[in-house]
Image (cartoon, rainbow over all chains, first blue to last red; front, side, top):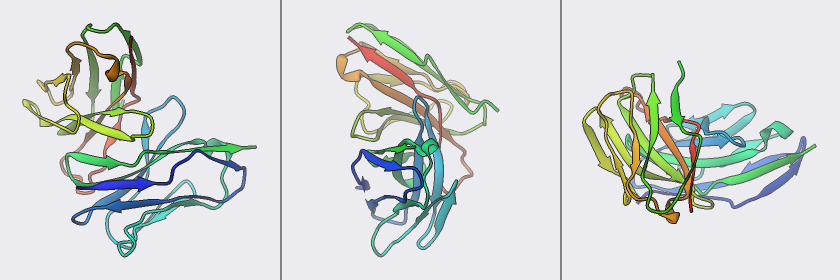
Length: 111
Length: 114
């Protein structure tokens, strides 16, 4: 079946540091890939997405590239801010009725 | 648009009690789902619906019931609460015409069963 593995946290960074969160997936077909973000006390929000190989999703300074050859969708941001402190979830979907989520990575950015 | 709304935000139940978590969306989305979020496990699908009158089980359906009498509403019922159902519950929806399968999430209900 489909599954998502993302790097375990928690991750603690200083402001303006570079952030990478690794995500790899297992899927039988050609899934769409997503990064969702959950700020403290809130629900999940879509951060970015990519629907086919070599697509790059980007939003709010975050980027992730759909790499079919390495089955990866790593999230990166060049210079994080305190407001980026959140839990980040990698997810994939091959069908309309199910998203498969990674376990989530908690990121804390210190001023 | 309010998007996806959920009530209540917080709830404490005693073992054996029943309750209904409410979910509503105003985007005319066909597909709605319930997930539970537990530490270190991501989100897991409980039940889903492809339209009014049609529901099906997800990954972890035991102990939960759903119904979909209207396009807008998709309540989740706990029949006899157990401590293992302590979790954060999220409702999500998506439109039928979106081929990228993007889902929109509500703010969540934090449930504690003692």
